[in-house]
Image 1 (tube, rainbow, N blue to C red):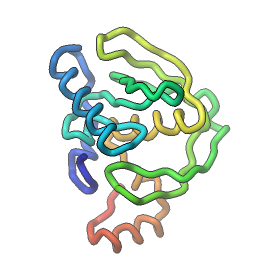
Image 2 (tube, one colour):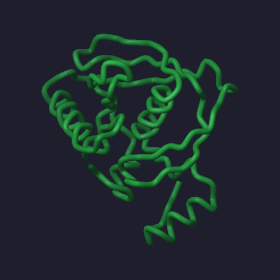
Image 3 (cartoon, one colour):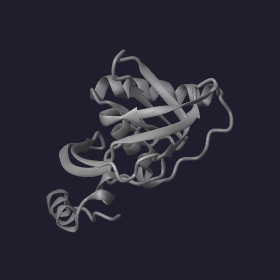
Length: 161
């Protein structure tokens, strides 16, 4: 797992154009990291790649699924909720983050088949968190100024947004 403040975490992902063995290799790394880290989701940057893909554990089946080139649509941006959220790249740290309760998404499977759907609650929050990763945006950018300053003191690194 790539840990904060590694610069790859703030590198925006490159859209996937070829659904080939390179993508399959990144998906395998993501899948392995999900098992090792015991997390809900992992973006490509967290395993050292910059392709636009993330893997997640399906809420009901616990199967690892992947979304390639995800795009989120917020159908109810005013329906937001605050929930304690963490990031595998900042292990053991959690903050209360405000996000929309539900998102609609579009993307593709690892084979290039188009997918779309809605994600609510924890799954919706996880989709938003991982798409942030793919945009090069980390959870630290959603922290208050005092939370960022506290993190900076604790980690002894500059916390930038």
